Length: 133
Image 1 (cartoon, one colour):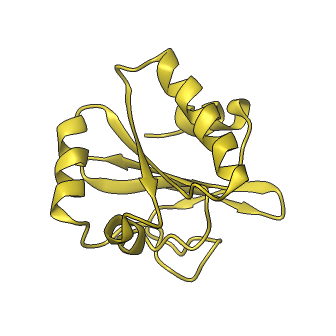
Image 2 (cartoon, helix red, strand yellow):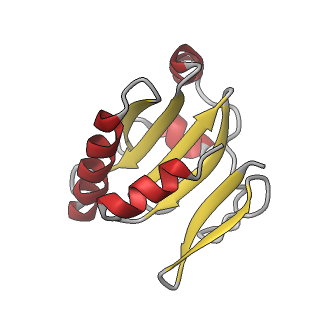
């Protein structure tokens, strides 16, 4: 089952990926991704493509970036990490309805299957990655 994780009052919530994301009223999946971004996702197969949406001016984003990079380095044959600057890469940001940063979106078979929103320590990033389909 595909799942999406959302932060609600400090609790991690698990919901089917096509239901509404608790962080917004937008669908949890992404729609009409830019062609180049879609190619990157496809090239990552069979690994899970992780898009980390962030901004250089946001200090909390660096926490999630560091934790995610450390976890991806443990098993690089399983993950592909791509940092997406929300200020300069508007296409993927709008397609995935990013309303809060930092936000980690996991893609399998070309579709967004899960999200992790907010600055998280490495242990929570590990739990999120281990729970992915």
